[in-house]
Structures are given as C-alpha cells and as structure tokens.
Length: 168
Image (cartoon, rainbow, N blue to C red; front, side, top):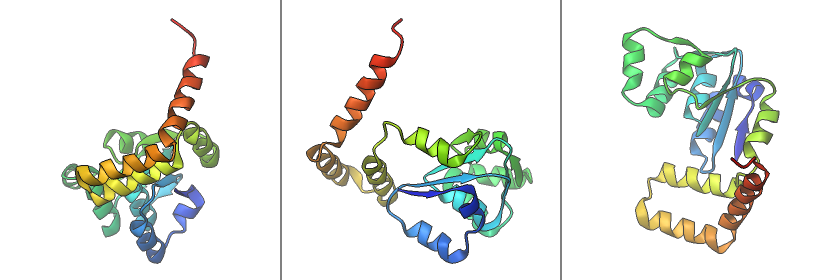
C-alpha cells in the first residue's frame, strides 16, 4: 500500500507520477487546498482518492484530463463540454472524481479507514483490477489469500465489530 498525504501529493513531479502509475499495490491519495496539475493527476489516478471538505480540484492540465478520463470515462467529456474544470470537493465526489470527502488530518483518517482492512487484500485487489486478469487469475489470487489466512482475519474483524454494534 502506498499513501500520498496532501503535502506529498502537492509536491509530486513527473517522475513520481510515473512511479505511481507503475505500482501494482493499492495507492490511496488525499488532497487538500487547491489540487491541480500533476497533483490532480496523481489524485485521480489513485485507486482510492479522498479530498478534504475544503479542497478544490482543478482539472486543467493534460495529465489531469487523462486521469479524469481514466477514472470516470466519457463523463470527463461532459465536464470538458460544460467547461467545468474547477470543482469543490462535494462536486468532485458527485462527479465520481473522488471516493470520499474527509475532514481533519489525512493520516488520522487513513488509520481509521484501515481498521479491519487487510493491506494484503487491498494490494491484491488493486493488482487484479489493473491487470484485468480474468477469472483464472482472480481464482488463483483468492486461493493464495485463503491459504495464508487473510479471509479469516477479515471475518474475525467483521465479527468483532458486529458483536460491538447495538442489537435491534
């Protein structure tokens, strides 16, 4: 798993963006303030993208348009036609350009988000999605995860959460 907090996201350069695109594990990116240029591209190319509630996403650079197209497909053309290149966080989420809106410290959010989640399973899922491997590859990967006990950890976390939740 690779996490790009807002400060690291803002300082990304073309070499780091190329490295990000070459990763096989999950990439989670968090944006704050004005997210533009290569930072916008990196956020949009991430497997899971979050924006601070006060953030503004600028889709103006060619790399950002490419990433928007990768993330939302033909809907990116509608944004371009409407000349909607600057989106507050809520609008970006509504358009499918980010997965979640957060408030506060991105690292604290990541710690909460990862509770009960398996890094190994997230990395495997990201790899499979990028490779578009098909049924045989997916079956082999899930067999590997079962063999090393990952599903049991996930089930245990689920059952632990369920036992703490109020009964209705």
